[in-house]
Length: 557
Image (cartoon, rainbow, N blue to C red; front, side, top):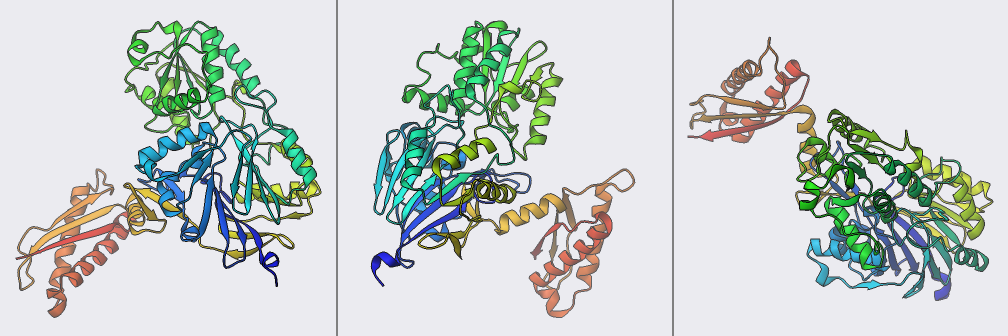
């Protein structure tokens, strides 16, 4: 068998398949025991009520550690594509490649992580090419909801893969160039082995819509408003920010930025020549006293994030943005699944202050998605004409539906991987050939911890069951020589059964348990602690139908 015959081209998602977000994809080339790898995107997802105390979650890169990684290519600057670099780069060390806008934000992220001086970051021009061993990567200009989004044409001796990244077809993108249709058609003419493609909106018929249409809708809405106006949108959507700013200026308003990421993104945009012909933003001092009819606040926090600008405005704690009766708040963003309750609470709190709320439900033109709907997916398949379809960037139902759509488009082969599934793209039929370790790591207290780690497991348990803390002193003979103090956290009481009385009852149970210990059990603190914990958990089930965490502290005198 020759060396060429032993080579394989494989695709390995470690994040972003069977979920939306936390993208980490790898492509390997070479014999199975000696592959070279490139990584595409290193993103995060965010915690929810199931992960108390955890705001950021990253993919587990364990399989790639120690592998021959020759480059990490970033398609665009959304957090679910670059947000984990500060945490994971030390574990998958390799040079980074990104276009200028994305590179600017990556530098900020690496600087925050304290590793900027250790990382080699190459800026790649739009439409540029990268030579990485057996991989020749061409940046393909596409449109999305952020500046400088790129698809990747990954050329190898065994065929070309079109990795779309996040995309849609926008013929009037406001910021940046239109999708490079000619390059995609050229790739299709040359032959695309496989297309690894965004599945987010596969259930939506039609097209996502254009930022140009949003620009018109926002201008019409803002021009008719009196009083203060706040607009909540994703800071990363420079085109949306541009539209809001120009709508404000056309209405005689000046813009003040509220939220750290707004300042960071505008700095990145200006570094590459965007937002260059707008009026200077108002300072915080100016915004405090600027006339109500002449100001617009561009705010973070459209998803109801507790520490973001809009939540602080709603609470009345923001240092310079104050909204009340006669003022307006426009939500120019989609509702990310899982955030419905937080956004609803935010909007209700603003309404309590007398602020009028506008969303895409009552003003449909003020937001469009950044991901392709079914007609756009069909168009992409017609341009690229891949032999193999590999849906990614979606939940299981999205990926399965996307595979059906690809078959309707006469794609000969489809593969629907989960995170950790290694897909053989060539040679031979495309198929899953292995399953490697994958999963999630939690950023908890500034440290990366395992998904099933003890700390988060205990925190979840405490969140749903409460905590009991028991302390008392014993002499060497095992006699209790102090009061028994039982304290409860997160456990209820009512008028008929006050919590204090219930805890006193538990203290009596502790005394009974300790008095019942004999011999070695009485002398062994660990045995005594376990006996007390068992008794209190049993009692707690009877009282509260809960199994709280029991922490027993015995002081020997």
